[in-house]
Amino acid sequence: MENETQHTLTLTDRSELSLTGINDVDAFNEQEIIAVCDTGELVIKGELLHIEELSLESGIMTVKGKITSLSYNEKFTKSSVLKRLFGG
Image (cartoon, rainbow, N blue to C red):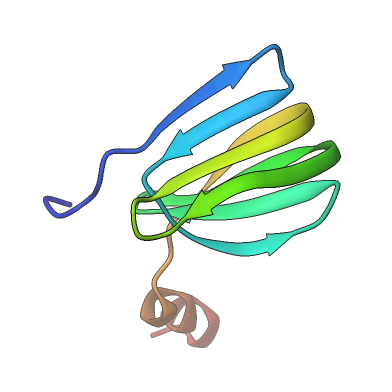
């Protein structure tokens, strides 16, 4: 965990979300964006969501739209998922 980048988020009027510490975006559409940070996945839900800015080099992302939900999923490595599936 010592090599993790700092992850912050700022939500303004539920219509603009500024994020740092973003490593990747797994999926996105107008209703849901799944962003990856060092501590897991951040699931952003809403309406008419649009990624205004994305720089994976600096880890910055800006999202606009009507944001209705923010939730985190724990980070799983591929090996831990396989161990859980196959009882390893």
